[in-house]
Image 1 (cartoon, one colour):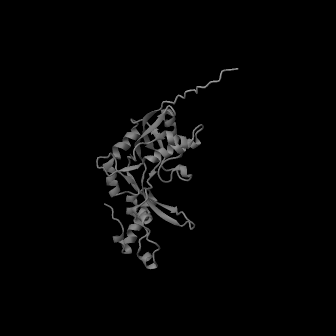
Image 2 (cartoon, helix red, strand yellow):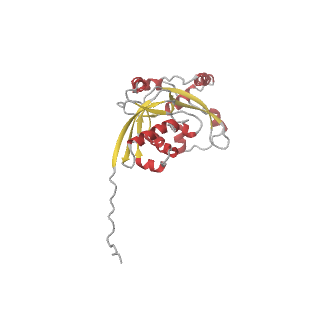
Image 3 (cartoon, one colour):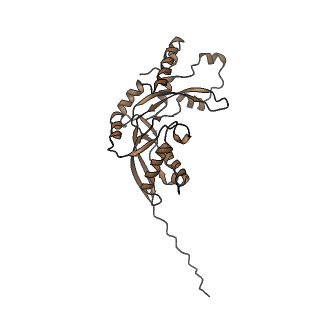
Length: 260
């Protein structure tokens, strides 16, 4: 009879390390910022309740410049390279969501093994005022107009931390590239299934297109553009011009935010 083993086999835990890689990200389609306005957040924090008919008559539904100014996340530190930024979780989300459609990878696993450090990622590029007709969520699906800051040509550096050898830097690069193709960041991204905003690609830091955006879209240029924005397209220009004339005609100019 074989001698019974009374000693358990010793387990050898896998030694893991933290890897880090920096990517130069260049936008391929416009980045539309989608931060909730202060008005919306204040309404969630302390709801006002239903307005009376008299209150509705004296209430201005939209403040175009105010909504534009509130739409992007910003870096308050005057020494920061840019004014505009996006949440670092946006890029982590793009990486993890891309794993759903990649063979042999799982979103939950990638979410554990990969992350983007910090709260915000500085974004270079010149913001413009974009106005869109949208359909509101809810039973009525009523149409409305949203005003946001949008950057046609944008770029940023994205640092990605990952756990190796469970995942390699090559796999991280493939996932980020895939996320830029069919996930995107910001509002109207491909992940939502309708629009194609916020798509991006990874390039060399010396790429002339990347260098041009960094050179012309830093903090000073962004601050100037936020104070005196240009319309994103013809539709935005027409709507904005009509709004400015109409608030004056109705005697409501004191109720709207004026641009710098």
